[in-house]
Length: 286
Image (cartoon, rainbow, N blue to C red):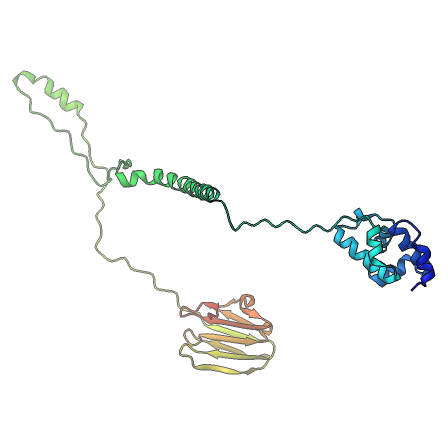
């Protein structure tokens, strides 16, 4: 704080920034001291003393910083603000959109409808052209011939009295078409279906102590215990429906000799999965 005599001497100095700087020096404060007390960057304090308002942002922020600086030094805030040529705080202009003119509403509605119609036309016209042939029956049908049909032989017209010489030539010119393939005859015997592959056993090898909770298809508990390291378990198809393995990283699960990756079913070193009726390992359904 500075005494009244110092404040009286500073009132004769022109300029808001100069008064602040003289008051700071009279109080024995450095720019760093002011910045630390006001929690303000030193560059901002220096800009206030040099009246570089354009570097400090909006006028409302500049006036607030000036008030804080003047309050720290015990200088009259109102007089400082009058001397500082800071732009006035202009409230923002509020434009009401509650009452929209009727012509504008009609124009906006027509514009939106035209946009919807255009989008619909762009999407519907190609589809209509693509499906037009299927609906009106004008789509060209492929010209196919059955391979099972045997072409008929060319008929030979009996020769009359005046065509005795031409008959042998016509018979010789007409090719005789013989079937080159035996017509396909559909068999009525049922086609045998391949037998489904047998479901595989579910084997577990424990390289560390693990707490397990294994349930059957009927909801009953098959096994719920702490299995020691070095032990193993094997379950037949249809015996297990739901499996929970603690310390899952120490358990190796095999199915039909193939190792099952427990990563998709593991969380926080606890694996939970189900075994379907076909013997497949699937995630737990909630």
